[in-house]
Amino acid sequence: MNIHMNVNSLKYISLVTLTLQNAILGLSMRYARTRPGEIFLSSTAVLMSEIVKLITCLVLVFNEEGKDAQKFIRALHKTIISNPVDTLKVCVPSLVYIVQNNLLYVSASHLDAATYQVTYQLKILTTAMFAVVILRRKLLTTQWGALLLLVAGIILVQLAQTVGETTKITETSGPEQNRLLGLWAAIGACFLSGFAGIYFEKILKGADVSVWMRNVQLSLLSIPFGTITCFVNDANKILSNGFFFGYDIFIWYLVLLQAGGGLIVAVVVKYADNILKGFATSLAIIISCIASIYIFDFNLTLRFSLGAALVIASIFLYGYDPKKSPTSIKSMQSQMPHPDEEKLLPKV
Image (cartoon, rainbow, N blue to C red; front, side, top):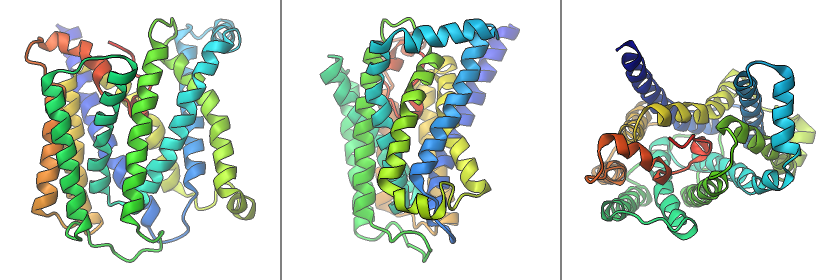
């Protein structure tokens, strides 16, 4: 009885945490890129996030190995060094996730938090597309219907933005707002997210490697790619102003928030099902809209509201299967999107 209550408690605590993390991350990224003062380099923030993930996952792997240093080192050697072909396979999603995270910062710089949050749900469509093409997965009729609803909702949101009804842009010292650039960055991130997630799922199947060890592999490969990205994009700024130019407590908080997202989702998927996870995502969109009204002078319109409602409905419809019981719904976790924070989910 106590075990059942503890599992239920973990389920809802993790869902509340995921909801807040989803909403707060979008709002925080938007604020960090448009607030007064010196603007930090997003490429360095992405790299620091990968370093935080690596350290966290190394600690978790150490704990998995019974806190035995020798077993820990042997496990790392066996998985990473003694199996170079498997490690090289992880290079593809590592590089893709670095590019994706940089695109998300571009999107957050040019789209208001609410529009960014809604548009990024397009990752459901891209993940489904790659699942059908790469994994030969068949979607339910309700899931195809959900994807159509999703596209219709995002088109409505973007139309509301295009005609100038959605947002009143306040003067900031941030970059000049280019809505089209922000939209294309978000769409690019969605496609990269869908491809990397499905590719990672394909190489993960059949491999006897823990989810945290896969995290270690990804981060070890992402860090060199992230370092190259920093100096390709911002070499002059880094050499002139320093790697941590523009950093303050808020930026470090943002780095930790982004790094912790994947760990939170792993707990959610372990203890919750797709319907509850869809509820968390939908609630995050609503929170972002409400918060944006007060923080960013966001003007909520009928067209935007209708588009957001269609996106939220599509999330629930995509995770719903009337032929399956609530218990067996958990087996459908592999059909859900694989955004960066979901790239390392244990299959339950």
